[in-house]
Amino acid sequence: MIHTTRTSCERSEQQLRAQRVITSRPHQDRIKFRQLRKVQDPSIIHQAILQYQFNEIFQPHWFGSIQWQPFITDFTTAVQESKHFRNKFLCSLLKTKLKNLPTPPDRPRIIFFHEKSPVLVNPMNHMNPIYKTVYHTHFHLERCPEPYDSWIQMDWLIRHQVAKGFHRFSSNNSSENKGFILKPWIQEHHAYYNLKDYYRYKHQQDFDLVLDIENSDLHFQPD
Image 1: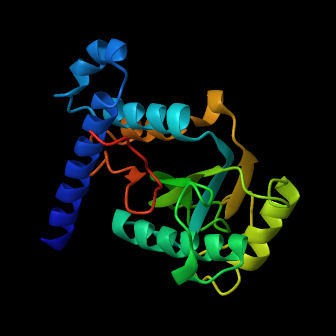
Image 2: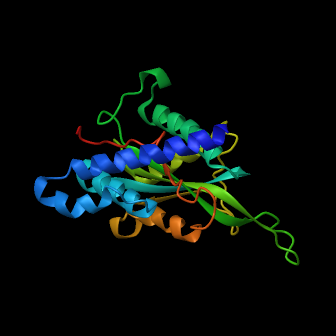
């Protein structure tokens, strides 16, 4: 019951935020956005949200991928672990305590997504491979202050400061499972990268829960 209620609330929040995207557009653009008011397709709703965030609010500088270990099989746990990652990362980046963290635009913005994918859970058994569908996390991160505008410095910060003492975050990469990957953000490739998960798991329960509203720095102009 608790999971069902949380899921319903998240879906309702996504719908409300999509409405704000539509109504905050300039008058000349609203005609083509009116058709979204009653849209139920999550991919269209989320595309409107992402388009607004990345075109109007900020352009990410980094794209990160996290494969949680031990594996995560439910959306709620992925949100919880991402919150821990977010807090550790921002505190390490800004060299401050959690209670003193500023809010955007006084710190870099970050948007989280959680996707499902099959992973090999017994890589040593080549005769009988077993796959399990688990959640992994992507984040879109705004450019950070020096020296962390450099890939080398940012990768080092996450692997050596954020990962320290973080039970579920592993920076180890193998040919089967990549614990953590950081790449420069490329709009053509990463802007709508996370929408593919809707179609891959379209007929599964909660397939539309991809955007992590709780941990993402989403900004919308007031109605």
